[in-house]
Image 1: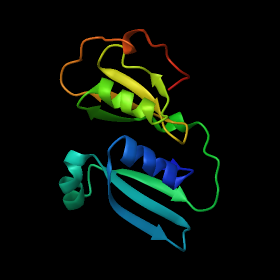
Image 2: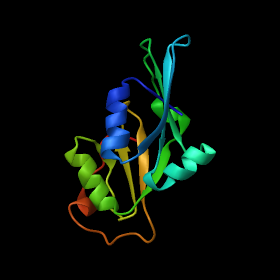
Image 3: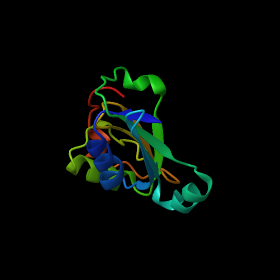
Length: 140
């Protein structure tokens, strides 16, 4: 579960930029929150049948300031082409905190200030520019 400050910005990141699919949404008027459940495209059927694997976004309707976003650890997703994914995210305005210099691993910054890890499916890709010499940006 990840608590989010802005549901629209978070859904734009997770769904439009990263490619996850919303599988369920639950609004709780009494508790004043919304839960949105997301799955990787290849896991949608399994997520709908078994309710896993899913990422739960929790949006509390009353403003809260979430600090120290790294204290929960991080999420990690395997991607088909780490360079292509990072390029698409970067073009979408996403900060690449740790570029995929090794063709295997990257960290990117989410709208809520926390980072997720991206891992290349299978073997690492050959190191290539501009990624191989790109500096880190911030922390993750």
